[in-house]
Length: 103
Image (cartoon, rainbow, N blue to C red; front, side, top):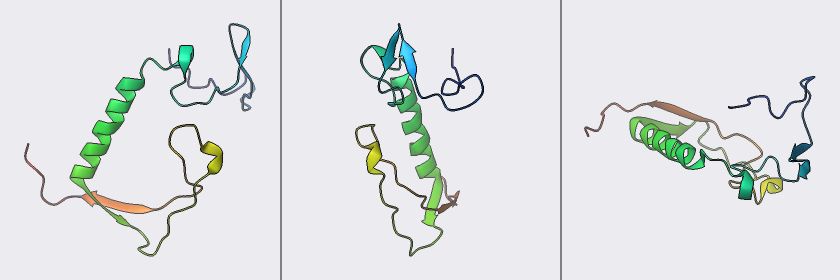
C-alpha cells in the first residue's frame, strides 16, 4: 500500500526519525532504498520514467525561456543520493512538434 503521508507525523509536521523492526533507519530518504529496504517497484518506475522522457522529447520542441540563462549551481548536500539536484530552476518552454514521426 502506498503511504503518501509517510514523511509526516500525526500532526502533519515533518517526520525526522524512522524505525524498522525497532532499529532507527539512518538514510530513510535515500531514493529507491538500499539493501533489505530496496523498492520493489524500482525497475518499473525507472522504465516508466524513461518511456515518458522519450515520448516527451520526440513529440515536443523545447527552448529556454531566457536564452542567456545559466545553469543553476548544484546542491552538494545531495551527493551520494543518485542524481545531484540544482539549487534553482531553469525555465523552459515546450510546444507540440508540427510534424509527428510515424512509427
